[in-house]
Length: 187
Image (cartoon, rainbow, N blue to C red; front, side, top):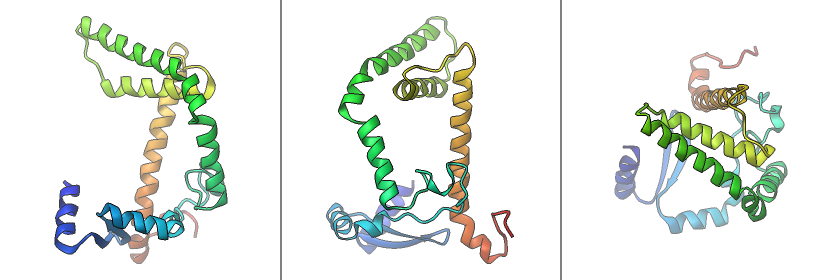
């Protein structure tokens, strides 16, 4: 496992390691006290994210929350998310909805167990998470009858697949560029 390998490297070479993974430079800090000092003294430098390879992202272009560089916009977007969606009042207000969805999840699993049907726990968990998020954001869960839930699940799966491709393209961009291969269609 990778964490065991990194732990061995750390015990051999010390609590701060400079690594290059797929030609991407990384600093690995394995000491909590050193990490605290680094974050305290170098907060802005640690927080700056590399510009993604998808500057014209399908997620709201360059102004999307997921791809925004560290700065005023990202701070503002995080503040909105924390103050509107994750504040204690919003979480308390959605508690009953979350409990209802968890009870629906348990009863669905119990019902299928009583019928001795096989259960795709991953799919059921995705339904649970989708319904909780939809209830928090839109005030209602997605309907299974008219296909809304399937559409949302498809969008989540596609977004997950795209995000993996973006991450992989960010990692492989420089090595492939050295070989004369471009990941973008621009010339």
